[in-house]
Image (cartoon, rainbow over all chains, first blue to last red):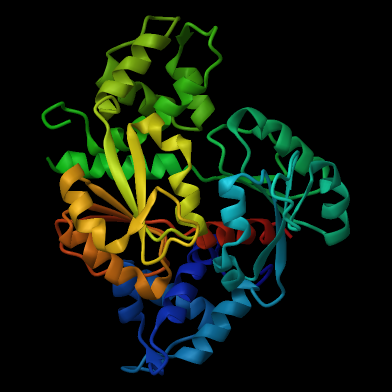
Length: 203
Length: 203
């Protein structure tokens, strides 16, 4: 994306546009910025600006050719080149993510999970000791932490040593990481609690 | 929470404070707004305002008594009274959420998943036909959608008919719902794609 002139904020919204365009019924040939803005509950001005940065202007009164827009979004997101992530922690959540097909839409594959144990003998779960060599060999950029909170920092340290540049952390902790490593926390319990609060506040 | 004078924005941040306070080592008796702000990467003024709405002012130079703050947060969040949610779709993700213990921190339990099939004969997976009666009997307020995208709207319709007031949707779709039903989308693939974008933009 470097030098492409697409802002970080726009880049951050591209996966949403891509999901939306992909979700359109197959017989739809054209899609307007207005329809996308409505479907994603975003401001129309913002959507026009974002799409224009990626795909130029749409045709007046018709919108964007769906296939052209799809191609432009995929190119901008670089989903064609691909990226592999690894999981640390092969419990229920780790295994669910390992088998979750949705990531491939974004050019990301999750091939293996690493754990201290592998009770079911799954071929996709490897001993944690093999993490550094696997990451090095496969040039892994992203590590996903699915271990319990008290093991999360240790898992993060090992991932950093193994050369990952980004960590997606499902454990409810605050990790200490080098500034060069990006981290994104995913707290599912917190998300559900937020929703619960919203419902409560109605009554 | 009605009439408690706690704003929606503050309420939305309470689970974060609760998680943070719970994560403190057991031997820590007092915690300051400054430390919480730093730990959660929030503005200190905001944290002071939020905590003050829930638990009054802390002691000067010492902060809040950890147990008092914990109790105040739990009371405000109503985690002591409890709430049960159900899952529609007992695939890998649904089963992972079913066995995920983290929700209990927020007073939310997930007892059962409903599906059209139950290959493994799990006692916590019930036939989808039983969803309405189960929801009615147990006064279920939240439904969690873990079915494939093309089955998500049907699942949502059934949950609405069954009386849920909120839907947490893991399928990458836009649901059509009555205005009275709150919805929160959780797109794990999108989250990972966002992280991937962040890393790419460094290089």
